[in-house]
Length: 130
Image (cartoon, rainbow, N blue to C red; front, side, top):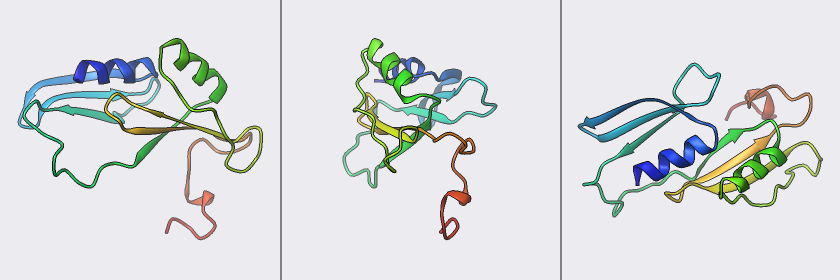
Protein backbone atom coordinates (compact mmCIF):
# COMPACT_ATOMS: atom_id res chain seq x y z
CA UNK A 1 0.00 0.00 0.00
CA UNK A 2 1.92 3.01 -1.29
CA UNK A 3 -0.09 5.60 0.66
CA UNK A 4 0.47 3.67 3.90
CA UNK A 5 4.22 3.46 3.25
CA UNK A 6 4.50 7.16 2.36
CA UNK A 7 2.52 8.01 5.49
CA UNK A 8 4.87 5.90 7.61
CA UNK A 9 8.08 7.43 6.25
CA UNK A 10 6.79 11.00 6.44
CA UNK A 11 5.67 10.34 10.04
CA UNK A 12 9.22 9.33 11.00
CA UNK A 13 10.65 12.49 9.44
CA UNK A 14 11.20 11.93 5.71
CA UNK A 15 10.01 14.46 3.12
CA UNK A 16 8.59 13.59 -0.29
CA UNK A 17 10.92 15.06 -2.93
CA UNK A 18 9.00 13.91 -5.98
CA UNK A 19 6.76 11.31 -7.55
CA UNK A 20 6.67 9.52 -10.89
CA UNK A 21 3.14 8.09 -11.11
CA UNK A 22 3.63 5.92 -14.18
CA UNK A 23 7.02 4.44 -15.00
CA UNK A 24 8.16 1.09 -16.37
CA UNK A 25 8.78 0.05 -12.74
CA UNK A 26 5.47 1.34 -11.36
CA UNK A 27 4.66 4.37 -9.19
CA UNK A 28 7.83 5.88 -7.69
CA UNK A 29 8.08 8.13 -4.63
CA UNK A 30 11.43 9.71 -3.71
CA UNK A 31 12.11 10.67 -0.07
CA UNK A 32 14.88 12.44 1.82
CA UNK A 33 15.50 13.58 5.35
CA UNK A 34 15.25 17.31 6.17
CA UNK A 35 18.60 18.98 5.63
CA UNK A 36 19.87 16.20 3.35
CA UNK A 37 20.64 17.15 -0.20
CA UNK A 38 19.97 13.76 -1.76
CA UNK A 39 17.13 11.25 -1.89
CA UNK A 40 17.85 8.40 0.52
CA UNK A 41 14.76 6.22 -0.02
CA UNK A 42 12.85 5.48 -3.21
CA UNK A 43 9.59 3.60 -2.80
CA UNK A 44 8.55 1.60 -5.86
CA UNK A 45 4.96 0.38 -6.07
CA UNK A 46 3.78 -1.92 -8.85
CA UNK A 47 0.33 -3.48 -8.44
CA UNK A 48 1.31 -6.24 -10.89
CA UNK A 49 4.37 -7.39 -8.94
CA UNK A 50 4.10 -10.25 -6.49
CA UNK A 51 6.58 -11.00 -3.71
CA UNK A 52 6.53 -14.71 -4.57
CA UNK A 53 9.93 -15.87 -5.69
CA UNK A 54 11.58 -12.49 -5.00
CA UNK A 55 14.84 -13.17 -3.19
CA UNK A 56 16.93 -12.15 -1.38
CA UNK A 57 15.11 -9.55 0.70
CA UNK A 58 16.59 -6.59 2.48
CA UNK A 59 17.59 -7.51 6.03
CA UNK A 60 17.19 -4.01 7.45
CA UNK A 61 18.43 -0.47 7.17
CA UNK A 62 19.66 2.00 9.76
CA UNK A 63 18.60 5.56 10.51
CA UNK A 64 20.71 7.76 12.80
CA UNK A 65 18.78 9.83 15.35
CA UNK A 66 19.94 12.42 17.87
CA UNK A 67 17.92 10.96 20.76
CA UNK A 68 16.45 7.46 20.89
CA UNK A 69 14.18 8.41 23.79
CA UNK A 70 12.77 11.44 21.96
CA UNK A 71 12.24 9.44 18.76
CA UNK A 72 10.57 6.48 20.52
CA UNK A 73 8.20 8.91 22.27
CA UNK A 74 7.40 10.69 19.00
CA UNK A 75 6.80 7.38 17.21
CA UNK A 76 4.49 6.17 20.00
CA UNK A 77 2.42 9.36 19.65
CA UNK A 78 2.09 8.54 15.94
CA UNK A 79 0.98 4.98 16.73
CA UNK A 80 4.27 3.43 15.60
CA UNK A 81 5.76 0.86 17.96
CA UNK A 82 9.50 0.56 18.52
CA UNK A 83 11.26 -1.94 20.75
CA UNK A 84 12.71 -0.88 24.09
CA UNK A 85 16.11 0.73 23.33
CA UNK A 86 19.25 -1.23 24.22
CA UNK A 87 22.95 -0.42 24.24
CA UNK A 88 25.29 -2.57 22.12
CA UNK A 89 28.24 -1.67 24.39
CA UNK A 90 26.43 -1.28 27.71
CA UNK A 91 26.78 2.52 27.79
CA UNK A 92 24.00 5.01 28.42
CA UNK A 93 24.54 7.05 25.26
CA UNK A 94 25.10 4.46 22.49
CA UNK A 95 21.57 3.13 21.94
CA UNK A 96 19.64 1.24 19.29
CA UNK A 97 16.03 0.23 18.83
CA UNK A 98 14.09 -1.63 16.17
CA UNK A 99 10.79 -1.06 14.41
CA UNK A 100 9.06 -2.41 11.32
CA UNK A 101 7.60 -0.41 8.45
CA UNK A 102 4.15 -1.20 7.01
CA UNK A 103 5.68 -3.58 4.46
CA UNK A 104 7.57 -5.64 7.05
CA UNK A 105 11.02 -4.06 6.51
CA UNK A 106 13.07 -3.93 9.71
CA UNK A 107 14.50 -0.52 10.62
CA UNK A 108 17.21 0.03 13.21
CA UNK A 109 17.41 3.46 14.84
CA UNK A 110 20.83 4.32 16.28
CA UNK A 111 21.94 7.05 18.66
CA UNK A 112 25.73 7.36 18.56
CA UNK A 113 27.62 7.99 21.82
CA UNK A 114 28.82 11.47 22.75
CA UNK A 115 31.94 12.41 20.80
CA UNK A 116 31.27 9.96 17.96
CA UNK A 117 31.41 11.50 14.48
CA UNK A 118 28.12 11.80 12.63
CA UNK A 119 27.48 8.52 10.86
CA UNK A 120 29.53 5.37 10.51
CA UNK A 121 32.89 5.31 8.75
CA UNK A 122 35.70 2.81 8.23
CA UNK A 123 37.17 4.14 11.51
CA UNK A 124 34.40 2.24 13.32
CA UNK A 125 35.91 -1.05 12.17
CA UNK A 126 39.23 -2.20 13.64
CA UNK A 127 40.37 -3.86 10.42
CA UNK A 128 39.00 -1.36 7.91
CA UNK A 129 35.87 -1.73 5.76
CA UNK A 130 36.21 -5.47 4.99
